[in-house]
Length: 280
Image (spheres, rainbow, N blue to C red):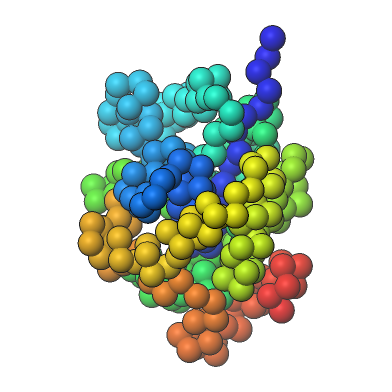
């Protein structure tokens, strides 16, 4: 008898609030009376982390080609599904497509998708800090259908390459083309009312709401707590060239950090999807 789907994918374009949700859920589902360490989020693993494959199969995936690792990764998530008790949440940044990735996000193991979206103007600012590249480069990347993160090289091998495409196509594919259920969260709504948005998230994940645990988990995952943890112990998922991962944790910083030309380019590149997500 086939087991019911158990995996919920926590998906976003990079720097859109995925890690915030991941830390909240780690504290709510698996935490206690102290904040869960940002470097100990193994209960909600990162789908593109090489350590997952290396741990499960006893291999060094950084020595393999990208094609060679695909079979390992596809089988890995089926193994996680078969061995999980209850639900399993996995973080991912990959774009949704109906080719190679249809096996990655396989219907028979997927219980649902949580998709976190953020104003691309703010994403551009945050991603520029994350990748330590000029904002103009990031604006170009976000409009490039061939954009990929973490191409293997000597300085960044802890993650598998991730095909992202443009910001618009990423949002469109997950919110309009993915055939299963998708729970949409806007980063800006999380900032305005975390209690409401995180309660909605827990309901989608079929979790019983505990008001005290909700309040505690929101406190443990607030930006000041995450930033303090990073300052004290660092964050393993930060790009090597990036100064910090948790930068400001707000919305609207693009208004003081982007030039008028950069704002115009982002809006022209993503006009239709920004309107659909209520960013224009």
